[in-house]
Each structure stands twice: as C-alpha cells, then as structure tokens.
Image (cartoon, rainbow, N blue to C red; front, side):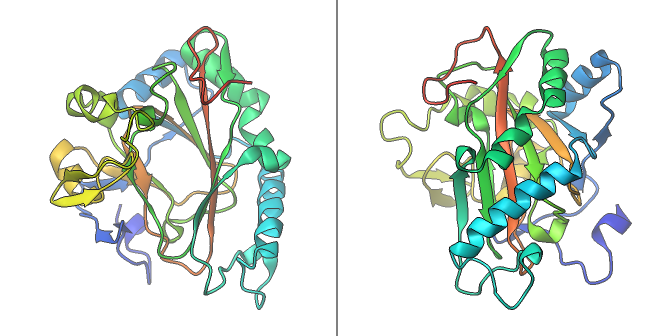
Amino acid sequence: MKGFLQRAGRAAPTSCGRRLEISEDAFGELTESEVSSRIDDLRSQMSAQGYLFFRGFSQCSAVENARNCLLKALETEAALDPRYPLEDGIAASEFVSDLRAEGGNYPAIHRLPREAGIERLFARLLGEEVRCVDHTWIRVKSPGRSTAPHCDIVYHQRGSPRINTIWMPLGDVPMELGPLMLLEGSNRSERLRNGYCNLDVSAGRNGTRLRFRHGGFFRGGQYTKKPDAAQRELGGRWLTADFRSGDMVIFSSFTLHGALDNQSKRLRLSLDARYQPARDPTDPRWPTD
C-alpha cells in the first residue's frame, strides 16, 4: 500500500474534487484474479468483492490499435495539443470533456469487448450462454474530470438483473489519469439494493429530478457527488490500480463505482461494455448482439 500511494511526486487521490481517505480501511488496490483459477473460486471472488480484475487479458496490439483510432478522431476535433506526439494524448488546454461516444463508430474499439476469450469467460462465470449488449461506451476524460459514484443497474433497469460490466483502459492508465475505482463489497449492500438500485433513470423525470444526499444536491443517476461520504456511509474501501494496456475489470451492475480525478495533462481513454445471460430479458434500449 505504501508503494502504491507514496511514490515520489504522487498526488493524493481525489474524486469529484474531494480528497479520499487513504487509511487501510478506506482505500486500497484492486486484487488481481487469474483466469486459470477454478470457476467456483472466481464466482466466490465476484460475489464477495463485486468485481474481478485481470492483468493482461487482451492483446496489447489490439488495444493500442483501438487507442490510436480514437486519438486520431480526437485530433480532428482539436482535442489534442499539437505540440506533442499524437500517442501521448496530451489534452488541448481549451478542450474540456467527459465525452461518451458510441463504439459502433469505431470498429477497432467495438470489437475489443467482444473477443472470444471474454465471451467464454462470462459463459463460465454465469454457467450458460451469454450475449454482449450491442453498444460500446467510450469514455474520454479531460484533465480535472472524473465520474461520480453510481451503479449501472439504474441505467439497465428494464432488462436482466444479471447484467455485468467490462471496463478496459485504452492504453496505460495510472492512478494520476483518473482510472476506475470500485467500492469493495458494495454489490452486497442492502442499503443500495433496497433503495437506490431500484431507480430507473429513464423513467418519468428521474434523469433530471433534483436529489439530495450527503449534504448536496445533484441530478441524474449518480448515487452521490461525495465519494468520501459514500465510503463512510456504506463501508468497504475504494479500490483502484495503476492500469496497463490489456487489463480488464469485470463488475456487477450492483457494484458502486466511479473514477478518480484526472490529475494529469493527458486524456484518459477507456471503454466499457455489458454482458448478460442470453436467455434473460433484454432492456429494449440496449439490445444484445
């Protein structure tokens, strides 16, 4: 833990502009999983932790190709500083975005979460045939931007409750770039499941309705704008990692997650996608392949 957080010059972790508690009970590093492990062990880890973290799951060449395709598109939008090489992904000073693009416009990115190895892994985990949602979410986070804590189920309420998320960095994403963070064990929180996780963001005016939690007002599907307060309320630890190209995280749609603030000058690039049992109902807003 000391080496993870206290490297020379490493800034204290923040999310939504708020400094996170870094005690051993409140903040830590994701536990790595082995794809070769017994399937019962992986299922137990998923149930207990709310996630599985695989190092080097995807071929780096495929990830780098997808990253370069996205960087070239961002270059045409004047999102990158032309004084630096394209592959560095340095944000233009005037470009501020938490872009969410649909992966179908970028075939190299759309293919990544549909690798045969990922489908086989999900089939093993769920013990049945699976399908990938026919949508790939591309995330581009500018310096200073993050993602507020939320559970994906509130955006997929009209389909299978057994839907799961894949998160993949497009290139290396160390902690300073604002990677994914998960609240350990939050998938088992009765407080979340009996309350917030029953929300359908698209129903009525839920997407714009003003909410109040942890001393602040906000709109949309987030659980809170104060990750530090959520950790104190729900318990567990915020977990993250220094991600490398080819890494992958799988987590439950009931797992509370967000992102650290991007404290670098670079754009943080990542994708996420969803898998569910083939026989389960599909949310009509998100059909499967």
